[in-house]
Length: 448
Image (cartoon, rainbow, N blue to C red; front, side, top):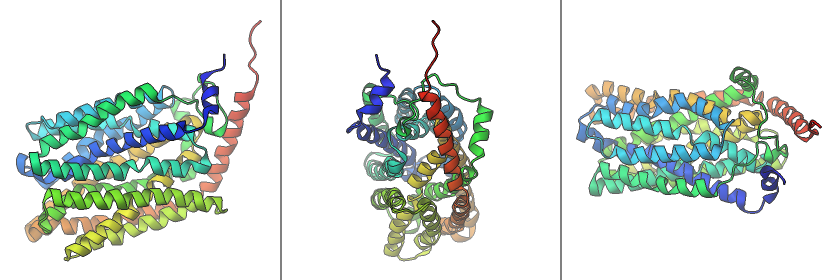
């Protein structure tokens, strides 16, 4: 009887697309449940009578603590165990706790619920990106990753839209319940219909499932030996910092400074993040694959460097303009460029990483990004807003966000530096793939 991995590797057809659709829906719910608190922030602040610093801790640090700390160990498990099983359990946990957040009666209870959501969501992206790398070859991987990361703008779109509408109609508690239920349905579909592919399938390696994995120290040494890896991780950290601070603080900014309701700014944010973010996410991945097909050696680096740099002036335009229509135009353009980084960064990290370390590579990327960007970004902006409030009142957020916008140039520098090393690291990864392919195809001696 043929091993299941061989049959799956030859199945082709529409099944990889089906898996990608499920994983994209998974990532959509991941960001819906993560981002919905941002459009509810002003209502929560009023209801629980908390400061901007406490609000920043709630929207950023509460989720980011365990999401960051557990990212690497869960990713390590995903390189060893069933990725489909890890995804299923994680989705169930974060969906249940998102729904339960609506039952919180005080700040501490809500903070603890968001901690639990972070625990669950730590098991979503690393195994999902590892699965995509086994279903799609490198020639199509940036596009596949870009489609997967559509979950970021789509989830944010739904979070802002649904959260704003439900908050206006029935309050913030009901919005959490509405956000949590769909994941409890999706977990059944994933568990019953998604197959676990063999590691290295897209490269044609099909290594045995019981292949020995290097100890963690040796695995980390192999990853960090790729000089582009840490630079890509840091570039993504600055890139997602802009996404996190704008998602957390632009809803309160437009409510306080421009007098919009949660439903009104929720609709505009849904449009700018959902449509603009989708344009940036898909466009970044598609353009990377297109230019590579025309002979460009490292198109991702140029795309990432330019798009990350553009987020600074566009965020400044959004928060410093006194004209609401100009600010909303800046908001849309900002989200186009702010979401470009996701697909090309993820695809390039997967490309330079050893096959049996891909989930760990994503876990490191997300852990580093969320320790600095999510756990620290929103609270620091909230702290600056509290400081400026004595002199600038409701407009304190304007100046706090303006200062934060310059972090984008840190990402620009990291991506530019990564471009010096990425081709050499890809060559090194290819040598490792060839060695793994040779080991996988070697005859196995069996005892008589």
